[in-house]
Amino acid sequence: QGQLVESGGGLVQPGGSLTLSCVASGISFRIYHMAWYRQAPGKQRESVATIRTSGTVNYADSVKGRFTISRDDAANTVYLRMNSVKPEDTAVYYCHANPAVVGYAAFWGQGTQVTVSF
Image (cartoon, rainbow, N blue to C red; front, side, top):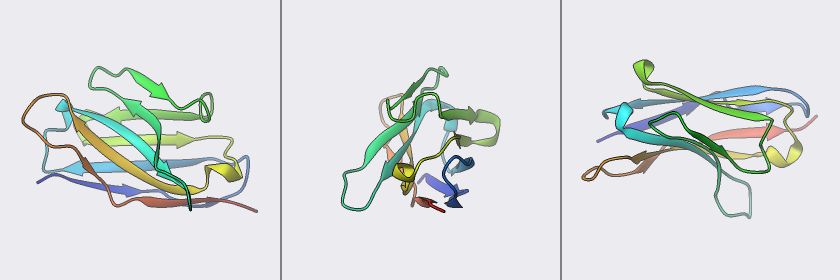
């Protein structure tokens, strides 16, 4: 059974930067498309950024130009670099693994809180 463990969340001031990490274990990381989602209080969980096994990336319009997703397959890790953060970026950020091949299950990490405030 695979496991995803996020880290790097915390309190950051508006305009600041933060890098989230998600380390996978128990899976063949290279066969998974990876993504970051977030969920703010009272709102639905939304996709923030995705990176496919090919390295192709996609971003939500709200974070384009500010956030960067990357992956290190040798380290089984996906990152989310968050620059120029805004109060509306405050949320619990979740890592998600979606298999690119049949026969494997998708799964989530436990989440890490990001709070943007003075």
